[in-house]
Image (cartoon, rainbow, N blue to C red; front, top):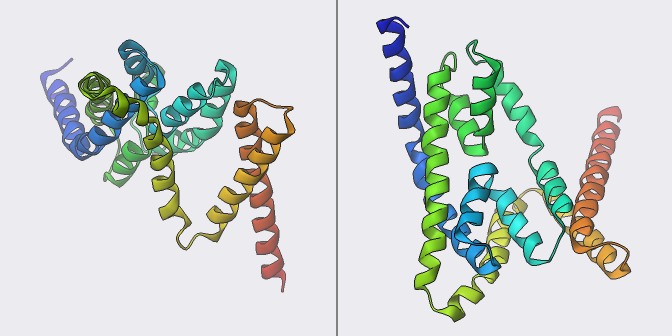
Length: 240
């Protein structure tokens, strides 16, 4: 590799890291909370850190803790995670349009680190997305998430047992905190959340499905149903 090319790649990696500092700082409290709740759910330090290492998806990891606490099977958890993160295919495809030519294995590596936050920062960058920039952006964000997951789990040992056991309530508080802002001025989101809750309750009460499959099926039914209704209303309005 020529010195100029090597310097350019090193420079773009540093630029990516600099762009990702705000993400790394923002991940700190969320990852700390995840580590604390993972401990209260019964995961060991290694299990919590490995989940962050191999999944690296905040919402999916929090939902997985909820499903684990409910005794849900592994396949149901994986399937729910897949449905929840299916939008990542679109984000990766969008960034690939602006990415420089690179071996597929390199693109696969940094595609693993695409989250809502890293996607937003990368989308705002002017010009082509270099491989070095993407690796720098992903590296600092990913490192923050994994490291502070471990610190959060370790910090749980310093808390009183009663407080550790009550941390599971924080999981539901977090979901409510994420949901409420989305409901403001978004009637579609409100209908989706309400219908998913109703369908999940009906499926659980029926006794035919486990809690995990009830969540998966209720989510799919609600998402497809609400989307069809909204699309039908939009077409009807356009035809008037």
